Every structure is written in structure tokens, then in C-alpha cells.
Image (tube, rainbow, N blue to C red; front, side):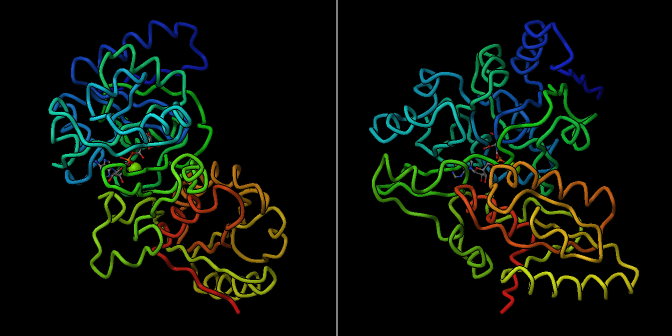
Length: 353
Ligand code: TXA
Ligand code: MG
């Protein structure tokens, strides 16, 4: 299949492109588009054929449900039960934005979109292009992150093309995204709201609106999957976001962490392995082996979140064998950053005492 790649920033025919993209979706085709979190791979969320194509293009297991993206609150009524005051409160506070709500679905939403579940995940993204596209398509757009299943999510159009060129109808390339990590997911189908995936809307922000809420066990303790716990967001059980290299993280006093990483990197290089190191602006100078990449200043969680996936993909490009990284546990986005980072590292976090 020939994929049309439209570079939005360099094209002044915006309305024409959006119209064309909307038509592709309406006819059951696939269009990748930017959101404020990561790029999404979009298809008509009410058309089972379109969702089949999404799973095929990504190589995604079909039990892992898709998020439906809407452009206004009226669209929510069509696809989900909304007589729960918590929905209204959260929508008013955080939509459009990096928040996905899991709700009871209406019959119009095919089970092929929801991985066979009776619930549906819904989000209103905070990105003009995404909202215009949903409006043009005139249907909720089902969109997982626009990566091959298992790879880090794409945060710019080039990375989308790398994974999906030739497999989908169109890519709308608008450069780099704002946040760089996927939305927060909250389950509202139970009595107590429960966070299924941490993101830019934090537990504290949810609790300001809802009072005390829960956090799914797999978010608190990722190793619970190995012990047989089934996460409520089916996607959280997969080894996501993974680079090809073996990634290990180290927690502890910065000089001691650097000392340990230097020792391991020296040994690896002696053995002919290609080593990458992910460091902060402040600590980069402590490393003497491997290729050192600065992810951001220690306390700049916004920058760290924005750079994470691209750095992992760059190490893939360079065919890096091993990556060593510090941990990044400061700031509002720290939970989301460490959730993705530690998954990429298969929970390989070593405490240096
Ligand atoms: O920021 C985002 O949410 C991005 C952009 C494109 O909007 N999308 C995204 O989609 O991250 P995806 O498919 O990569 O991740 C969706 C997650 C999966 O872990 C999936 O299991 C979970 O949402 N999910 C979807 N529907 C669900 C449902 N009905 N119940 C529980 N979890 C659900
Ligand atoms: Mg994904």
C-alpha cells in the first residue's frame, strides 16, 4: 500500500488535507495523526473492519482494546453510559487533555474495538489537528499509539513512518508532540475510581476532583503481572515501550551510580558491546565510557518525558547492545516516566547502596 505522508507544517492546504484524511477514515481506512501525548493510528471506531486493520498494521494482540477519541462531549453520549457525575466533573476539568476514561459502552461500539470488553476507553485529545480530524471524519476515532506493537510510542511523524509506512493510508506529520507519554487512564466503571495507567493527569489531580481514588495493582507493583495478576488495562501486561537493547536502571547517590555504570560500561566495551548511557544534564560529566545522552535537567520532568521514547529509538538506530540509565523520580510526571521507563527495562532497577 502507498502511504500518503502530509507534512502539515509545510503545507498551507490544511483544510483540504483534513477533509481528505476524514474521508479516508469514513471509508474504513487508517490515518496516523498527532495528539498532545503521542501519535495515534486512527480508524473509524464504530467500524469493525477498521479496527481489524489497526490491529493488523500494528501487529497488536486483539484482546488489547483501543481508545476512542472524540471531539466534543455530545459524541460521548453516543458511545458510553454517562449518568455518573464523576464523568462530567473530570471532563470539565481535564478535557480536552491527556485523560482517558474507561466507561460502560453502548451497543453501537463494536466489541472488536474494545477487545471483547463491555467497557470503552474514551479521550478528547488537546490537539487542534486531532480534533479537526475527528470532526471531519464525523465518527469517534479509535487510535492506539502509532507504533509497531512492543516498540516505544512515536513522538514525531518520522517515527510513525518508520513503523507504519506502506501499511496505512495516510500519515499527518506535524513534527514533535508536546507531552511525549500516553494519557492517564482512569476506570470509572466501579464504585471507586481507579488509575489503570499513570500519565500527565496525576493521582493528586484526580483526587482534587473526586476525593480518594485507587491505583491498579500493576501500576503500584509491576512484578504482580509475573505473579499472575491480570491488569485491568489489558495493554499493561505486555512488555511495552521496549528498546532492542538490554536496559538497566540504577537508583542511588549520583556519584555511586556513575561509578557502578562506569564499571559495567568499561567491561562491556572491552567485550565489544555497544553501550549507551542515559544521564541528566547535571550528571552527564561523570560518565567516561559509552555514548552518553542527556535526557534533561534532573528536575525537568516535562523535558524528560518528552525525550524518553525518542532516545530509546535513537539507541535502536545505533544498534546499541546495552543501555544504562539513572532513575528519574522528581516532579509531577515522575510516576508516568518511571512507569514507562521501568517497563522498557523489564523492571530491572538496581539500588546502589
Ligand atoms: O495518549 C494516549 O492515550 C494515546 C493517544 C494516541 O491518544 N493512545 C494510547 O493508546 O496510548 P494505546 O492503545 O497505545 O493504549 C491504550 C491502553 C491499553 O493499555 C489498553 O489496554 C487500555 O488503554 N484500554 C483501552 N480500552 C480499555 C478498556 N475498555 N478497559 C481497560 N483498559 C483499556
Ligand atoms: Mg501503545
